[in-house]
Amino acid sequence: MKLQEIKNIDVANKRVFIRCDFNVPMDEYNNITDDRRIRSALNTIRYCIDNDCSIILASHFGRPKNGFEEKFSLKPIAKRLHTLLKQEIKMAPGIVCDETISMAKSLEAGEILLLENMRFEAGETKNDEALSAKLASMADIYVNDAFGVSHRAHASVEGIAQHFDINSKAAGFLLAKEIKFFHHIVNEPKRPFVSIVGGSKVSGKLEALYNLVPKVDKILIGGGMAFTFLKAQGYEIGNSLVEEDLIPEAIKIMEEAKELGVKLYLPVDVVAAEAFDAEAFAKPTTTQEIPKGWMGLDIGPATALLFSQALEDAHTILWNGPMGVYEMDKFAKGSTKISHAVASSYATTVVGGGDTADLVRVTGDEDEMTFISTGGGASLELIEGKILPGVKALVIEE
Image 1 (spheres, rainbow, N blue to C red):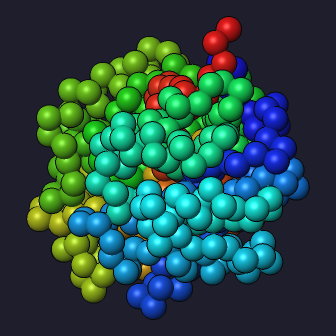
Image 2 (image 1 turned 180 degrees about the vertical axis):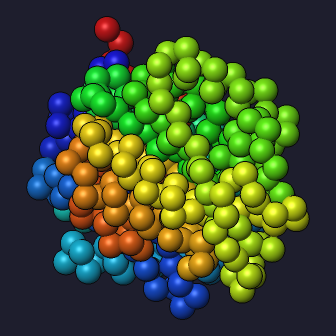
């Protein structure tokens, strides 16, 4: 798969529309608490500034329901961009209203216009053709640098790209880097290749597990999804999260791993609690002795040690999904220990975005990881071996 990249097309003095992913966490006072996604887009934006482009930036933020909502406005993003780029960011009043289009058309070289939240337009998530055409009319060049939403066929991601030929559209530096990294990790890893898969549900990771088992040397399964596998082995798991209908799939994955000689690790102990509550009484217990009516909410100390030892000889580690309910301090120890183990290893370490990226930031291990993806769902689909809709539109036909 050959991707058209921004450095290979002529952008000089052109009007460039860059789809970014500025969907960053904010506190209740609209302060940005982690601007990694904004900083990740700066290379592409600065490259366009250096080439005297007029720049139109677009992103979504949160999940607004009915048009404009002040709490989902991109004004705080404009403010942070102004701080990071040290230049004025023009804030558009809307997305494709006449005033916004006129502002886009009258931009001078080096000027930046930030459109309002793409999801204020109902047509964005429906990949509406009329909206795509209006967005495309603002620019000469389209650049997708939003890896985090490239698995969505949305108007500003996939629809707009259809209005540009292959020499007028490209992947930004961040998107190109993410695609290359995951392609290389999954298809040509240095061995031993160990994958850590966590999170709450097997259903969300099923395809990824099927794709990973033939490619890895070891697979460590933690988080809520581990209980479906433990139940499949006949353990009493109390009130822990389980997807009964996926037990046959769990058995199939375990059998395939055994057949291929892949070591599959499951928790040997958990931190169980009487209820899903930060204040609930909790205790470590082996997976064979989870009390009836209790639920496992984190991997236990023995499992954290076991998993850490399994990681010791790894040359490549791919991690997607926490080991427990890390948002509650009481159930964050397992995820924290695994984070430290991954960070201190000598392997190439790749963290698949979303919750896992948030977790390594909280544990202070962010700088020790080789690569942290900006997209959770998108990285998962790449691991599943899919071509993302936002990427497919930028592939050069060979």
